[in-house]
Length: 337
Image (cartoon, rainbow, N blue to C red; front, side):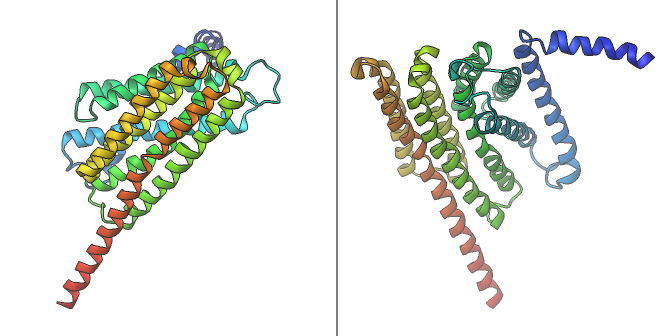
C-alpha cells in the first residue's frame, strides 16, 4: 500500500508534467545534461580501475579523457535515434499523409533533439571553463551553431528530418575519440590505431558524403515543402554541416599530424569554399530566381565541402602505415644486430 501511494503521484508527475508536450523540450535538455554528468563521473570511476595509465595522466588529460567519453556516448545515442527516424520510422515516410514532411515531429523526436541540446550545452560549458585546453574557438563556434540548429528544430518542430540526417554524421565521433585514446596511452604505432583510421575514413565517406548526397536529393524532391517550412533552412543546415566537418576534422588533424604548410594551404582553401557558400546563400535567390535550381546549386557546393576533408584522413592512414612499417624494419634490424 505504501509503495502504491507513492507510485500514483509519481506516474502523474511524469505523464502530466515531465512528458507533457509543452514540457518535453525542457525535460529532455535537463536529462541530457544529467546524462553527461553521469557519464563523466562513471568514466572517471571505471578508468581509474581498469586503465593503468589513467592515474598517471596530467589532470587536464584526465579531464579530456572523461569529456571525450561524453561525446562518444552522445554520438552513439543520437546516431541510433537519427538512423531510426530517417530510415525506419514512419514519421517522415512519404506514405504518411500527415502534412508536409518538414513540419512533422513527435514527442520522441523532440525529446531526442532536446537531449542533444543538453549535451551541447554541457560540452560547451566545459570547453569554455577549460578554454583552450579542450578546444579552441572553432569548437566554440561549432557548438554554438549546433545549438542554434538543433534547438530551433526542437522548439519549432520544423525541419526535424533534415536535422536528424545531419546528426547521423556523429557516427564518426567514436572513432575520432578512440584515435585520441590510443594516442594518449602510447598506441599510435599499433595496428589498432591503423585499423581505426581506416574505419574512420569509411565511416566519414558514408556518413558525411554519401548521406549528404541523399540529403540534398531529398531537399531537391521536397523543395516546395522546404520553402514553406523556412526560407533559410536550406542554407542553415549545409552551413552548420560544413563548419562542423572542416573545423572538427582539421583540428584533430593538426593535433595528430602537426600539419605541414601544404595541408594548411588546403585548409585555407576549404574555408574559402565555406565563405563562398555564405556568399551564395545571400545571392542565390537573386542569381537563380528561386526554384529547384537552388537545391541543385547547394548540393554541388556542399558536397564539395564534405568530400574535401577526406584527404586528411587518407594522409593520416598513410602516415600510420608508413610509421608501423618503419617500426617493424627497425625491430628487424635490432634482432639481426
